[in-house]
Image (cartoon, rainbow, N blue to C red; front, side):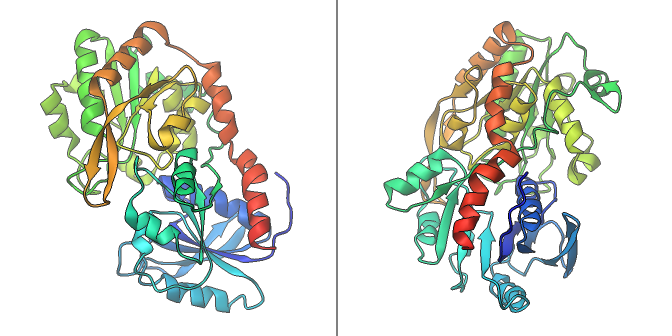
Length: 394
């Protein structure tokens, strides 16, 4: 990675960098590279490290961490935290970066410069999202071509910078600490292993990750091919506002013997990334359709490990699958809360894709690995983030 010198300060409003979420993962990668490039950095947390105003050690440097406010999105404290952080660097341009759903910031009284790395996960743009991105002090950065096209159609310019994965970690990984991964998971080599890696977080009514649809499709597939099993890498309870997966499994008729879940303590803490690479490698296919994605990091992580994916043919997902993976069409579904359409993936088409994977496409995919290379974190930093940041901090 090149080491140019950038002069400025960035306050990142997102999950705490390094916490085991997609935003925490991407925030950590971005923070490390920004700091090494010379930028001052601060974390404005809305999830991860609560209630403590202290420092984080990132890229060998102590950086300030500001805790979540009384609002779950910290929009009540971001302006104050920004003033405090900026006052410590009076000679530097200080920019607020957001890595989160931007509609949560519409009521925030903030007039400084904002760069929003924004997820656009509906098939029609939510009005509250567009309201924020149209503000004069906001510079949008879109995670996927889908989002960039949506904004372009509305006359809103943006820069496309995708999320990244560390392909030095996410690569074909046959074992966990010297033990073959399937032995570690107590799954035979002959079993057709389907994986789901998705956060079980929702509003209790709509689940964007389509757990019910994916599990219904797998249940139909498993009935025909009982030498299959599904590994669901998530928290299975409602503790994060998601769905009780045990109830869905009963409803679709999946016996416990066909389902494997991770250790609940370990999944809440976050498995080491090298373990995740081994899990992906052990899968015959990753099942990753949803109602809509702003990006969808697991689809790239899996492909970097040589595992094909079954994903949605809409929103960001349609641009995140190799030519030998599967893209599932769906039916528009109205999201009243956001005033926009999601799309529900077709259960029948998911089932057909699982069967195609079972019959024709088991094993490692060089095409998937080659496709994932374009999302390597250092590649994205050098070819997309650096030119963009030079324009911001010129």
